[in-house]
Length: 241
Image: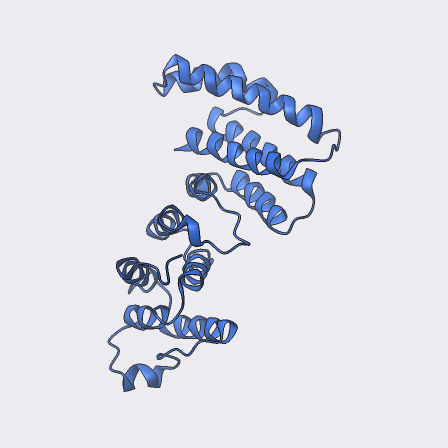
């Protein structure tokens, strides 16, 4: 396992999260770095505004970069991911792209309690234009990450997909009744017949699984749950991209 994230990636992340106009305030960067330093028992050089002056740190981007270098790869991953998810930052397109690149480039060092696959991270990105669907999607992920409410996780996933289709197709139909219009929607997007048929066939089996097992409160295999989460994510990414 790598010891640190690539230096170029750390610099890029620091530039984005510490961007002059839209990035974090200097004091927030210092406060967050201090918090992580305490959590991970790490000494950081830039722990105050006085330290910035003492070490001649020219800006907040450099302060964040200098502090990030003190953590190991897993810790750096967590810090950058958490900062990307901060309410003041997560709506920025460059921050969304940074989060996707983090997951894509370093899947082997994600902390063990991170459940996000690349499909999940990208689905969040593309769902940002559909807040109701995104809210349910995030709710499902939060429940899954805490290992509770198994049936609710898959219910929320299904309903999130249903809300997305209602938004895209401008109707109020249930998921089961969207398949004919979905085929026409995909055709209008220039999707080839084989892919259209593959998509709608998979969706039919997805609905059968939900109806036969989730609605009847069957015990759900953990591997099946993870598969359904990723499949739902791929469904939604493909539609909203």
